[in-house]
Amino acid sequence: MAHFRTAHPGHTRTLVQQPEPGHLSASGHPQHGRAPVTAAVGRKAKGRSHAAPAAKQPSAADIAAIAAYARPARFDRIKLREGFLMQFGKGSHFDSAAIPQLELLVGFMEADTGIADIRWMAYMLATAYWETTSLKKETVPTLDKKGKPLVDKKGQPLVHSRQRWAITMSPVEEVGHGAGRNYFLPVKVKSLPSGEARVTEQDGDQFTVSAKGLHTAITKGARMGAAAAQKAVKTYADDDGVELSYFGRGYVQLTWWSNYARSSAQLGLGLQLLLDPAQVLQPQTAYKLMAHGMLTGEGFANGRKFGTYFNGARTDYVKARAMVNGTDHAAEIAAIARQFETILLDAKP
Image (tube, rainbow, N blue to C red; front, top):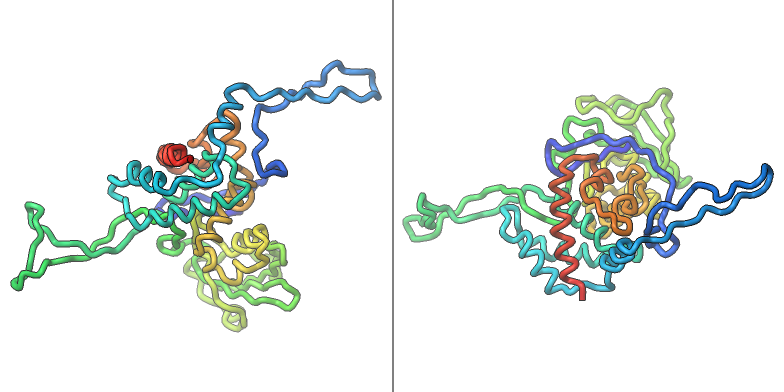
């Protein structure tokens, strides 16, 4: 089972990974247009071949949408910043520190030849906006009841610390690090000479992880995950592996050691993310995880991908939430995606 943990406390779902067949074209562009006609034309006698199904041509609306949402080589950075301020600058969660992170994310997308559609970009940005908005500690002036700054006996302004939810647009760690969940406890990981790895959980269950990121049980009857209150058994204490934790990290947060291993292999990184899970906090790695899942349906996306929700004239920001976390806050994130779509369209050169 693939588990995804949102950065917002209290909004977690468990997703069953059921990859679906299907892929992008060789150019990285979606197969736009409606589904081909599948009925055979003029059925022939038994034993003879049938005529090939006739593919239905894209409608005028499809063609217009493809052109309108085609991603340019580069967006106007001044218009990008102005659009972000206009759409989000007056919100209570706004933080100017998010602007350079937004530009960094857009830069990753511009360099990614697989990202062909502005709607894909808008949905990734909306997802990053939602999943990485987190508590920020800041020092602010202390005000009186009339909203005027207070000062001490020496005339120095009084200040106090506070926490507020702020947009970061940068990879974050899961709030609480998965406390109470079966992936909360650290495990021990040992890199093996064969290129594989051994994982030992605190209840003594052990697994071998192949270079392709797939795991098999060493311990008879082993089950992945240990109760959060589990006390380390002797097998765990004696293991010579490195102790590592696999709580949520990233733009779309990755959880469980098995998902770190599999996602790492899918990105062509071998077992790097299993052996060094903190790499998921690096913006470029976090972006690759998010884009790969949404483009291919692999990993956290559970078989769902961009082409399902954004195809020709079809735009479905609400149902696209299924790629990440079912229907959790789908309408709110869809509204944010539409705001980012406006920003990106206005920033086209």
